[in-house]
Image 1 (tube, one colour):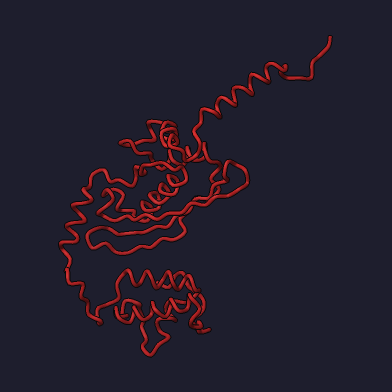
Image 2 (image 1 turned 180 degrees about the horizontal axis):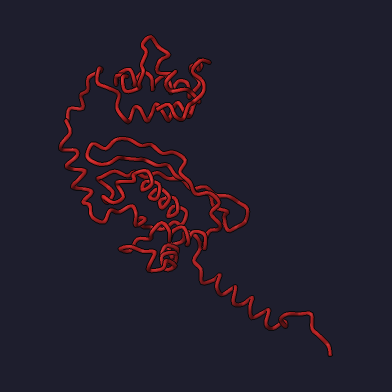
Length: 253
């Protein structure tokens, strides 16, 4: 009895190769006019909400079409107070894909915000986590080149336009502020980010001048503006960083 060493005969192999070529021909080119509709057809109904894909679905389809996701993480989180809600957060996110599992890496980044005006109340209780999910969805839909937003980017029970208009109407329109006004949350967050970028201790930095502060909240708005200017000079290397302020501390708050 003679045993063949081939698992398939020549005709079977040729038929299978024809099937592969047919599948490839049916798949639109990446980013083509037909690409969006093709990608959207791959989402399961459980991965959609009102015609928009959930981030979990974007993650699955991205790996199916583009390659393994090697990195998916927030790279920066900026939290601040929300006078009319439990909190506010802005998250910068990045996704790294092993493109077509070829060993070539592609990185996609984006940012997203969460506050009471653009997120449902249930998720407002977790502003950083919610903003992170939104930002991840933005990265993935950018990688997939789809012409839609992620479902998490659209609140289900909020009129965002009305809330924003009301917020604008309730604020002074002159834009005036007094130099002795206390430092703003935005300035505090900016100083923190800049100090981290240039490896500077926040508390040592704000106390490096003539005045001393036991808390950054004691800094005035005008003084904070000057501090930000100095940090920018540190970053562009137009001013040397004093040795006694070097060393960013994550727990400075």
